[in-house]
Length: 220
Image 1 (cartoon, rainbow, N blue to C red):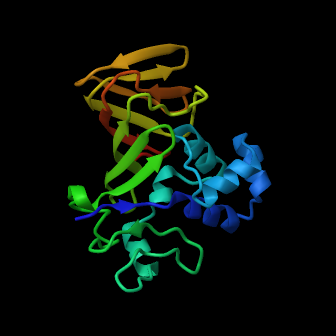
Image 2 (cartoon, one colour):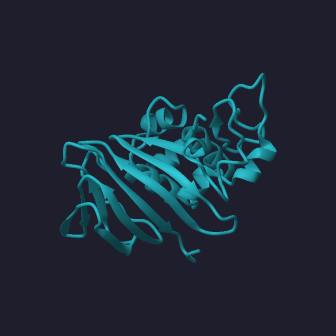
C-alpha cells in the first residue's frame, strides 16, 4: 500500500495567511529571502530541517501541526476519482495521499509501513510519522539522513521549544550540541532540551536511520 507524501508548503502558507503574517514578515522572522519562502510555499523546493523548525517557531505552531490531525484532515478532505486529497477550501493543509490510503488511517493507532505520512526535506532528510495520539504534543518519527544529508546545508545550528529523544538504528549520525559534537552509531541514544543549539549530519556512506521523539512544550 502506498504511503502518504505530505505537501508541507501549502500547509505553511495556509497557517501564515491564517495568522495574518505577510510573506516578507515570515521571511524576516526566519532570516531567509521572501523568494525562498515563496518557493517553499509553492512546493518548488523543500525546507531543510532547521528551516522548517524556524518557520514553525515564527508561526507559533509545532512540526506536529505540519502533519495535521488525521481525523481532522479526513473531515476536510475532498477526493475526486480516487485521486490525491486536495488542499481544503478553508486553507487548512491536508496530506496528499495516494489511492488506497485513507487519510484517517495514517495517524494510528496502528500504522503499517505503507500507511506512514512522509515528509521529504532538503539535504537528503526524510521523516516518516510512526503515529500520533490525539491531544498529545509529541512527534513520533523514523528519521533518515542520506549519505551527506544534514539538518542545514549552511551548517546552521537550530533551536526550538521542547525536548528530543533519539535512538540510532543504522549508520552513523553526527549530533552537534552547542560547542560539542557526538558521533552516534547503532544502539546509541541521545536526549536533550531542544532549546540547545543543535544540528545533525551524516558523514558516512550509508543512510543513517533512527527513531526520534520530539516533545513540545507540555510534553505528552
